[in-house]
Structure formats: structure tokens, C-alpha cells
Image 1 (cartoon, rainbow, N blue to C red):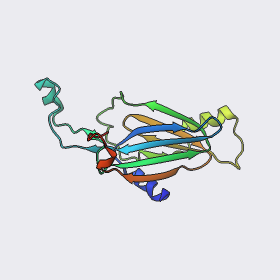
Image 2: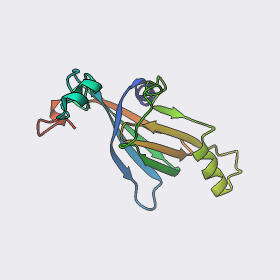
Image 3: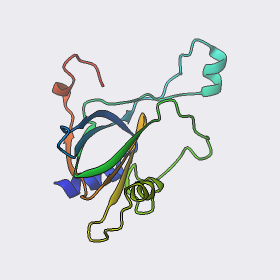
Length: 166
């Protein structure tokens, strides 16, 4: 299932980082939970200004709801990680449409080079990997000596006990 979960994660168009946990001090474990955001029906923006609503045109809320997929990634033996808050990011409309996977391994990442330089890492017998997950609210980068373990589940109505979406 881990390989299939990663393949499914690579196909998702919208993600939210919904939970993040570190192991105890003597553990080198990270757990990150990402929920799939599903676009709703297009409708007016309802900003309170008809002029702005006309400029924006129809908009769709991207929400986690029953039927969304939840991905749990566990990074054992991580070396370093970085979380960047992207909730206030604005994008250029011309470059906003991207077909790149939101989950990827990047062997030439700047963060990986930075970590290797900081550690004076020269041991080629133990490779270091860089994984990046780009969510709508945060970007998670992890440098680790092991690939992540991944699980996927489909959320049902019982996952929303108060009757509202995440």
C-alpha cells in the first residue's frame, strides 16, 4: 500500500497540511497528514462588492469533505525539515496553472545541499533524500536517509463529527 499511496498522492491537485507531529527527542520521526481539497461548485465570490465580484467572476471553494483522500507520511530517521507557511502567498495568474506533482523527490534541491554542507556530509554509503510536499497552506521539505512510509484513506462522514468539513 505505501507505493500505491505515494502514486495516488502524486496525482492530487489540491492538498492541505492538516497535522504535523514530531517524535520524542530521542526519536528521529516526523508524521505529516495531508488532506485532499476538492473544488466546490462555482458561484459568486460574495465579497460584499458587486464590482469586485464581477471582476473575480465565479469562484470555487477548495474544501476537505467526505470522499477526500487523507495521506499520512511518516519520515523515520529524518535529518532536517522545513515548513514554509504559504497561506498568504499570491501567485502570478500566468504561472498559477501547474501540472507538477505536489509530492516529489528532488535530488538537486537547495535545501538538501544546505543540509549536506551544514553537516559536512561526505558519506556516500548513506544517501540523503529530499522530499517536498506543496500544500495550499504550507510547503514541507524533509531531508532523510529513508524514503517515507505512506498510507492513504478515503474520508467518510464519520471523519467530520461536527457535521462540517475540515
